[in-house]
Length: 298
Image (cartoon, rainbow, N blue to C red; front, top):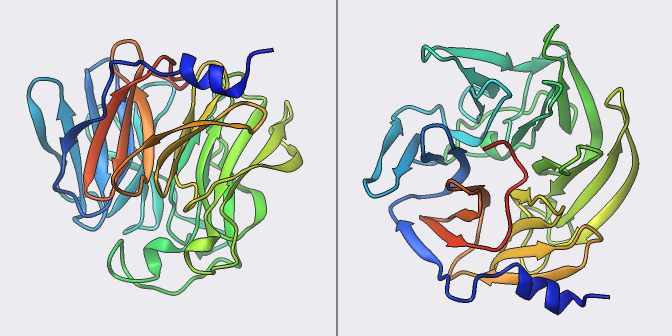
């Protein structure tokens, strides 16, 4: 049996170092890799903008008024899907640049402030909806919570119907599927506003009709909390934490850490081989090469 220490060693590149690609954000979030265009986009929430990093060229503004964008992903057609605190909605950017609203309310009431999003291979859109973007004017617009809780939602791609997938999170945050989409991982970062609140990742089995069953805690993340995370092709979970990035085995065992000088918020795999980890962390965008391959769509 291979020990956790040996597995962690196999996931690292001994000569690779953490690189600082940018350091002028206020709260860096939502990295998404565009493999077909060869660049990384990410959100700078308090500055109400999205930025773009292009290899060998550097950083420019991707979207000047992002409506306080947070989490980003791409759908199966390669379109950008974004969680917007400012508009309290999930949107899609069409090929011609127009923006389509995917979800902005449930049961006749406005959403809280969509945080992170993932698109399944069947086209369903899953997103988390905590209240971070309406708690103050720093990451959105201070406003009243209209929903009865902080839910995880699922959107049908054909009908646009929005359903609650999970209703018992304190502050649902990062969200991702296992490589075969049989397991859904969701972070709860409720400890941000309650010292006794949750700071863990929960998992659910995903049925063929997208019902979620067998709820369990996958890992308690400490120090700090899990915010955004991604999985590699072997099912390892790479998650943000107070001291950097933590890597967990599919069984929930902590394999190792990428230590950073500041709190990590989110991350994604990118580069031509999807073996470069891009990490958003407070004012920074970091990257480091690893001996793993990202499982998400390139």
